[in-house]
Image (cartoon, rainbow, N blue to C red; front, side, top):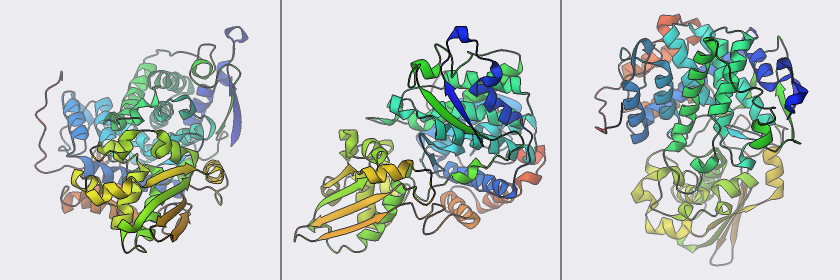
Length: 498
């Protein structure tokens, strides 16, 4: 890996293209290196993982509406949409949109956390949709996905967005554009322009994840993927983009991030070096914000030791800065304590999630968020006894680059009416690569079958899993079948423009 320093340059300094971050990203994308076997194996896992969550969410409101919008843009050959017959293809950018919403809706696929937050699996819908439309085989699809993960993870390692209240999908637009560039074997110049355009149009504030959180939380990464498809199409036609987008005098670093004097260091693979960043990422066992994964596991463990929850007087979660200020009481969001809050808000309330997991010693992607579950009086009472506190040591470990120190959990102290306490801690989720039960292929398959049960027929499940697990050997026609249909899928009847 090569560490690249990135800063603002005055227009008069005339920064050469080859020295710009967008060009360096594009050069990595255009570098035709082989995909390592363990990387290919993980790409397969994440294709299955994405489909799992899409299956579980296919009948929910946001994916339904996104699917209906996509249906207004039929195209042949086009790309299929999760839930629809595989012959009902739509324009690839709209397939990326609809499938991206379905994948993101339940906050239940993979994650990578460093200086910024990310869900690298959000790259897959856009890259896959272009492959399906263009009739590209599985080997190139795997290459494109490996690039998407590489660029997103490397940007997340080097550039913090959230400290400036910029949403993490600003790293997704460039990574998806780069992945599509790899997929299509595009030259560096074309990918360079697409990366810049994709960043320019996908930079937005984090209000989508603050206060009364709406379904735009699921739409935001889908929009970034859609914009990436359009950016590549535009660049392939010879159109340019704002340049240099990162380093320019009026660019992203100078006016959106840390300003003209800021310095960032972004690691990228050297020429000829394998793209292995996907192996640094981790998926979710629970449908919740990633910082909740370990604490849900801890709550299940601690809850089994409590006989009477009415005797609990206080629960204090000592955790990282991010957990405290984004999904904890440090956010100062009253909605996070509201039993009538939206699902999108509840899955960003560690107070709520810890309470339910403590009481139930379980977590379910639907039942744990049901209005009747959130409104249960004993749950509301206990929920309002939970608070979070930032612990500098947990914040340090959260940002550590040492795999043996990295931690996304915390220490929990539960106080009882008789003065006794129950104290325990957890560093990483059970499903994390360093956790108690790291996810392997059989776990991904089980997750797919569990979430697809009662929604996708067993025959259709088997067909999809057979294709996904052999993706590198598929030809273009078979890649077009890499979706699933749902029998009796109904629509909302909502009316828009399309």
